[in-house]
Image (cartoon, rainbow, N blue to C red; front, side):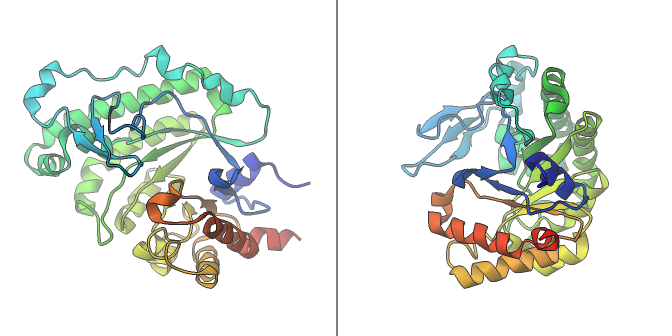
Length: 330
């Protein structure tokens, strides 16, 4: 009997031999993972030029509809801190309506999430340059802010667990950490400042029996070791060519589950079916193991990277054809 969606994802994450490749392809209506969002404003309405999130950060957009960019930083000047109101994770409205995601009795993996978990929230509040400078010039003050953000995250995790318990299986989050060349800060500073704060969050998730999923853009090679040490279960990497497919495989294969796809910058927008198939095969050879360790994940905003519907279908077919676990069970 084929494994359920939940079981396939769990086994891939825990290296427990799934019977096929897990897939997160909402855009094509195919997924083994169901998102269970709380009422986080996030970026607000992407159809509007301006929006404000629950932290008071102002988002702006051009005529091209997309997520936009934070342009209004409410704590750009530390003098604004006295009047600033932090969001309260115990706000009941944050969790209203979440029950609807459990109305259908299905054996699917359910993942909740927090958008802009820590570093991204810090620079949304302070501004990017200010945040990087603060890490060197005002570590105590920016550390205090980071701890307030972590406290909020822990409150969200606590509230969701109190309401839904083990009906949730994982928590996903975003924190972009690099350019295409390297990290924004040194690995040593990252380990000293951020690693213990991420660990508090990861430990809370694991205490709930949840896996932890992280998305991070950029060449983040040198912090993956730290993330493994503090218990990250799944890392979403969408630029495998920038990271180095062979390098990542040599360093981390079999030690963390990868959630990935063909490169969203170098491959999907510009290459044909043959190259896409070749890269799908390479990723599974280098990043997956016979026991698991790989989840195929879509990039949601196809227009932003110039990818057509049929290209996504080609990629899905390529990964399924190269699926090492299905081949082993047929």
